[in-house]
Image (cartoon, rainbow, N blue to C red; front, side, top):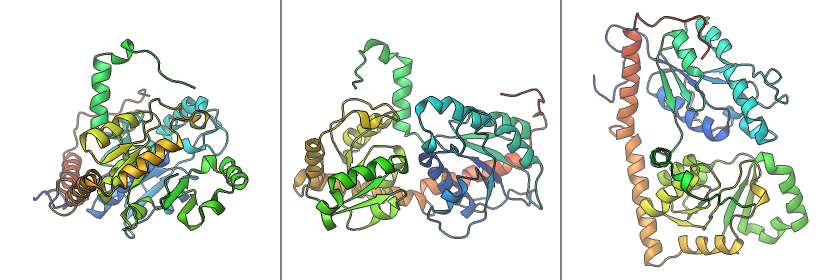
Length: 373
């Protein structure tokens, strides 16, 4: 069987059934939903686990067609975990202090998820594997109870992951001091997160920002079609916080970047974009912001942003070479996902591997009733 085929493994008539469990956060759910579309489009059966309040948000995401993805909403145990009602995603948390409660609530989904997957409706086949966000180690117990493999879906950049491994291995942080401290004239699109919307609207009203910029700038509240914007021929560059999803989307669009990292692995992603791939211009952020209180410290000045935007949009030799490198990366990224490309083949191999495991289920895997890990 060729690597480009998603046909069933000889000896079984059923397609592989992937159960996808994303982290309930926009930056984590989006890539997992893309994975669901890819697997479904290649002939696999896909069950996508979500919650009642997150389900409508999935419907706003662009779709490539009516692919047979089964959405499985589970009641999110906010009260049991000490969360305010309605906090079913990281974006809805009122503060970082409730992060542990949120993770506890996610882990409480284990029992209901196993029960629903065992009590299959209609002709739904048994799960062949569980694919879960790396932030959900509890899904290992789900996979063990069902007797299927579990794959970890990690949205981190491989470059950043390798850097962090080396830093932990050599204990680099133990030898450094704590350094945390409390006008471009270009057309732009500015997307504002819902969690900051009320405060942002007050600032817009007091400052008169939208009337000042006129048709030069467009402010988008809430969700924006980022991939469509990046792919538009009028877009010349992308100012990004260097989250890996945004970096990948920008690379695929063949655009140069202005890097303005906030926290986590984003600074290492910036190194990849600026120093390794050489398709970005840094704003010059030196210190990380604390998640949830980003607005309390100014990490870059307007002059820093103006300088970086001017550099990335420059039509001189350096700017032209940067855009050419970005365009070449975009071409390679697009080639990887079409028929015969490396990513296309790898998805086919994953589906074949899961189908083979499902058709030759390991008889030594047994449920451990008292296993709650």
